[in-house]
Length: 115
Length: 112
Image (cartoon, rainbow over the protein chains, first blue to last red):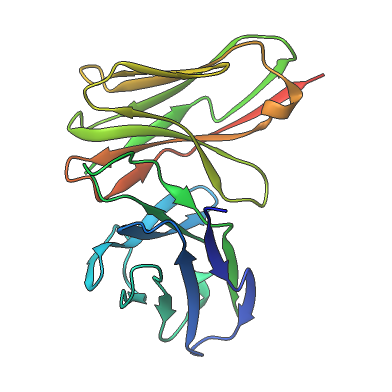
């Protein structure tokens, strides 16, 4: 089954404790992206990756890091989480623009609470 | 900077009614416009994608239109059903095809 998986689905942590949210897709997609969703602010793009070893900032990259060492994986790293990073996080993937259908496939989300 | 707005923020209709959800965007230089559905506690599911060169797309009871010159897209849902109750989001992709800007969503409730 074609899908994007995220782990963990739920996480409660404390300020300053480094964490990683994993994202993996099985559709051989070149493009992957991370979003956060907050009440009243909607979905905002954090980082995206056009292909392996190529990443770039979205609209709200502060406090986040990403890496793209393999095509299928795109982990989101919070080196020193703060309470304002409490949010619902989504990973998404698609074919590279112009190479086929641009439909974005989203993971189920990770609900993060930073105390 | 692209801004995407969806009106109304919430909508409640009786079952069987035809309805239109609106999406407006400030920068007409978009690569495509996508409509998504989000159920409570779930991820987003793509419904329709309209390329910048297209005017509309249809899937079953759903029809989405795109008017770049006026910066507007609409999602038409025919013969609404209670199972259509969800939040509907539109998103514009920039010309490079690498960044999406989402609207705030329309929360739809279809009453039996």
